[in-house]
Length: 141
Image 1 (tube, rainbow, N blue to C red):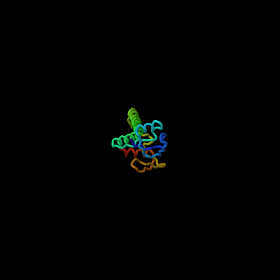
Image 2 (cartoon, one colour):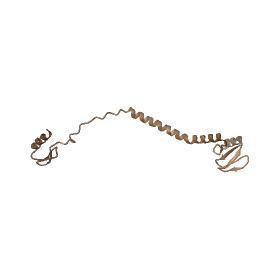
Image 3 (cartoon, one colour):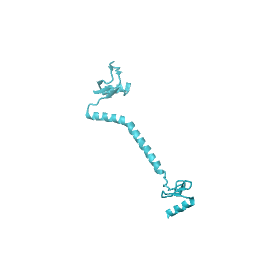
Image 4 (cartoon, rainbow, N blue to C red):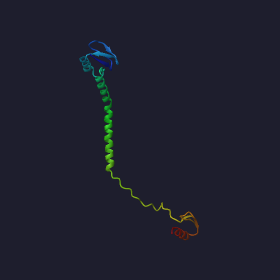
């Protein structure tokens, strides 16, 4: 005779006894199989008694609960592998250094206002543009 835990309330057709959820009942293995056959496996479950039965019971519960998680982990691994393969397949072109735009290059002398220019060393120069260009050339040399 084995002990079984009632998972869902049911009435035993042989004895007319009503079993509530959570109750422990002691019945033969044949009777338990008969109940499971008629009502389904959602109504009673075996309560393990020996350490081996307990280990099997616990392992079965763990497997049942972790199976969806293992499937999800495997799916995510596959997606990650595919993404890495796609990334490796893409050829990343080497960086090409571009010459700076002429708009970003500061040209000296800069005209501050009419007749006033700024040279590359930060000094201001008063005079016409040609004279300011000559002064800038003298600084560069």
